[in-house]
Image 1 (cartoon, helix red, strand yellow):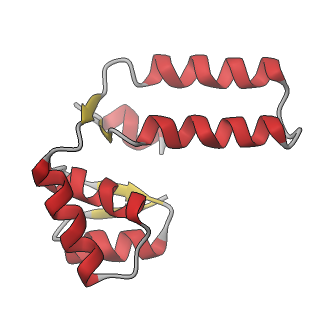
Image 2 (tube, one colour):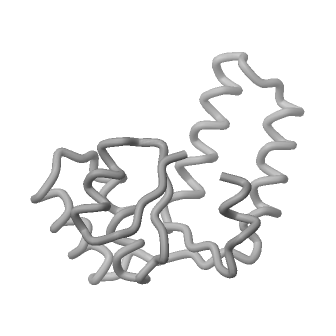
Length: 115
């Protein structure tokens, strides 16, 4: 993933990406898998990393693309919003570790890359 980010001229994130990532950090903290200090460090690094990223709003176009993806695939709603954001912003590549999401993104004519 870091290699892709290093090569990118622009990084685009769905508007829901940041809350999803912070939610995962909070879960790790609650479960005792990371300390409070580690949580703060992770959050700080994340915020610095996405400082220059383009954040895609939940526009009518994004939602329409997400709905289209849901109608063609078995997906969670949040996964479809990520795909809808990528389609709406004409992303050069859609990167995910979720095979089902990658398959759905490919059906929406996105170039995919598994990490």
